[in-house]
Length: 214
Image (cartoon, rainbow, N blue to C red; front, side, top):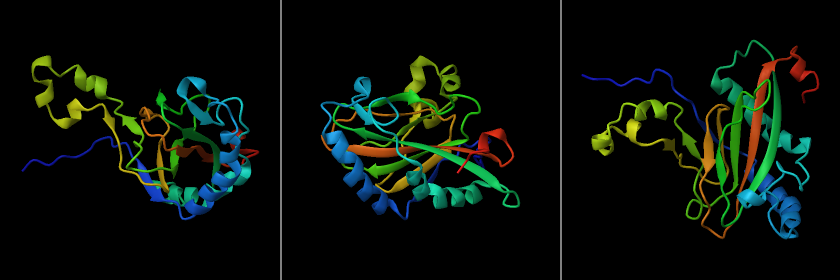
């Protein structure tokens, strides 16, 4: 008998946001009218509307409160010691894609200290029209060094594919390590695709980073 085990698994957590409809309706009523008044997306190179870039007001701390209960449940699921009180700083922003939008391969490790986890809320999303986020295998280059060109297509799937695209639906929240590189494929649909991205920085209450944490 041959048994396969994963020595160093990269976890990607998925959950349904119980208050998704509330968040979506507020976003449609408060944010979308501002975007519709703009002559073109503010992230011009990506053909993307996003408050991560200049030209749009960032979402306020009141938006963070929508996600706080789910984040606290995540800490338990992820295995954080519940005998200790954890401080969690949440930074978030939205991305609204139209036809021709995309996001390049990137991670969320910028700055010091880096955030612990990143998350994606699929706010306006149609699986028949849109593609999910593509996550990239961080050791795929190591696989390629051992794949001979003559038989590459015959190798096991681990060696063939550099990315993983999870099945997601509107209302899903994905949470993953901040080092995991990911991208959004080129959008072919005319129907808007909207997500809210989150950075979760988790640590001890006494650390300097959390003195002003919410």
